[in-house]
Length: 138
Length: 165
Image (cartoon, rainbow over all chains, first blue to last red; front, side):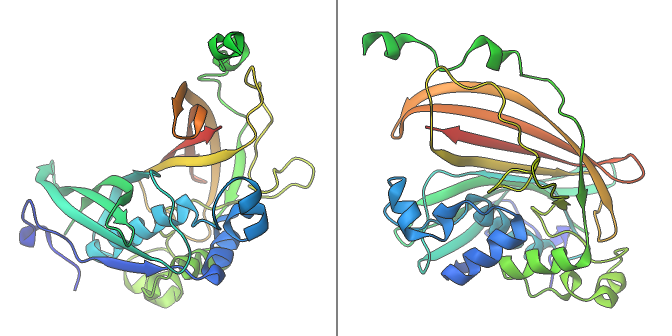
């Protein structure tokens, strides 16, 4: 199921992860992450700050990219490093598609490593959360 | 108007904060929180829920899902609402900025972190920048947080970018 380093080629796309957050999931995330900022669950509060609606937590999109990587590397691989910028807002009940492309495959000592470009995109295809990752694979 | 536009947002007091290590705080990693975090992301991998599955996969206990580095021990009066963690007011910019957005997050992992671990975190402001963009005047601050486990080993470093506008 999980990938092995030998099967990886530079330029390949990894399996996509599709998300679509209910407001309930945003409240679960608030509890899980400890981020209770009201712009993520209180529409009046969000509008009061000038937003058009409740927005999805940036850190939740970061965690979705973490899942994209975990689901690909499995429990024999490890995420060494990953991160993203929050360039655009995402909203509940809209698709958030997490994607990744292998940029580089290499070894450092005994570690078999892969660098990826990762991102999430909104229904318009805009990369709202561009990022990067380095993973080790069996 | 012309005067405010030329006064930097970043004050000398703010610049003096760069690189200063914060007092340490404790982040507990427990099974209930690992499960809650994993559930809120939408994981179905049993290693995040079932200790036997986690051990069968080679972990000491439920591992931390990516992005989860334990939960700060909440201390009423000292903890920050709505963000929970330790967050002092710190020196303020030359003009008030009332809104905040998360600009980005990075994680670097050196070791597995599993339920039962107790992490000690320290953070420091690593950079400050001001910019005018789509949100108007923005103050961008970068913070690094270093996490050590109960054996004193650095297990993870997180970098966060905050935008105030």
